[in-house]
Image (cartoon, rainbow, N blue to C red; front, side, top):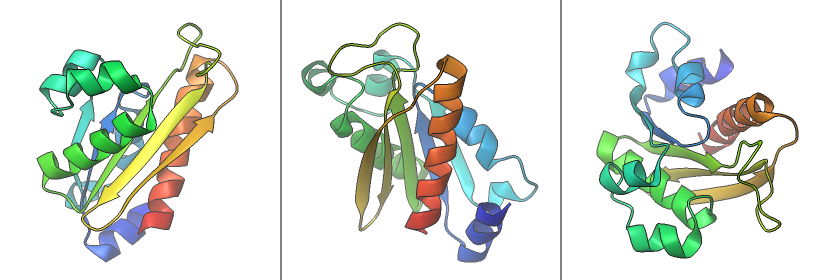
Length: 150
């Protein structure tokens, strides 16, 4: 509720591009009446193909860096911001599990990126717990990061 009020007061708008959370962040951002004043667009770009086709991320970059990477998270945030013509773009990409992890990127690895016209930031997290716990923690952390970005 505090973030909702801050977003309304700021007059800023945002768009989201979610991979492993598949819309949880968008759902959290729109749970309060009036959220349409700041929430412009929410994309669940779960597959690499969607990241390419909808967000315009080059397949070569996905192949080179991996869909779960700082580079892809930043591109997702920047490109959804531009697509939505919004003040902020937020993205989440990660490995929710229980499969898909590697020694370099274990299950629970998540990158959350924020983009504005003048600033881009990305943080890496390794969340513990089952698939649902990882997805929920990632979404809540994205809200916290947005609060600091405002």
